Length: 306
Image (cartoon, rainbow, N blue to C red; front, side, top):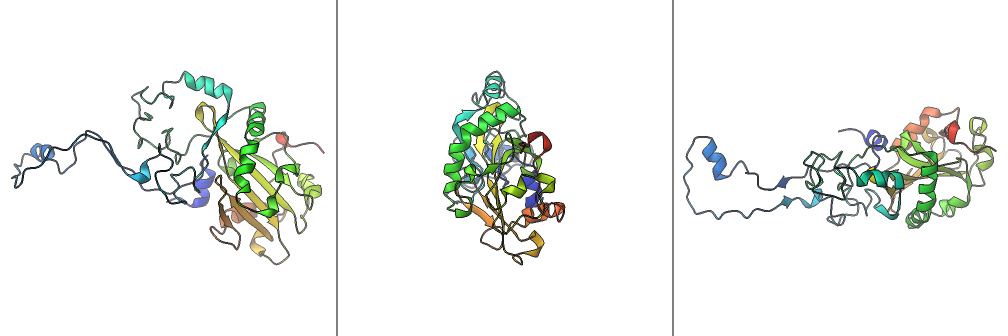
């Protein structure tokens, strides 16, 4: 099984570890009389067996088209839970939406094509099943203008979602200094589109990029995110937080405390806190320490000019 870190970096939705689902619809099980007949061995019937009614049998855990199938808050198949965020009802990428309307594999037409991607089969290959929120959907590329328009549309939904976490250190973060000019796609955050904010304690350094040096105690960096799916759908991603603590807090992380807020407002983890200890974030950011104080910089093409 791949590590959580690798899974996070290679998916556009919140990473998930789930059991395989089973779909039975008209197929014969190995224990059926027909199967026994095919083996050439006659099987004695001790008791009369009622004919099974044809139906679709589906494990609740593998019921991706029903986002509230499982009650477990941490069930990765529940986009309303810690596994990921539901798609926005009002925000889309118009160009992709228009193209999707003409596609034979458009999930809005569930019986369109008889392909492995056919969404009529809820347990089809996860990578292409549009009904499965746990699927590792492809990273969809959009223009800078489309990304910014999408972010402007989603921002109010994102703030409402993250506010549920009750983390005072990122309260009102969208009013902080934003150092990127437009939302941009981040390979280190699963191909999601992200934005970088810094509070007043550290923004005067953070905006210097390579010349930022070491950020002072009290600096907080917030990176919100959203995912773009085929056919133009948009979904809220996690809010990634870095908070500079007092010297000696954690040598391995450069005294940064990492936190991650899921789209449902749940705090997935925090350095030296409950939930995940966020080691996968600390280990990744350690790759640019100490030269950049564990901070990944905004790509040059997307930086604001100060």
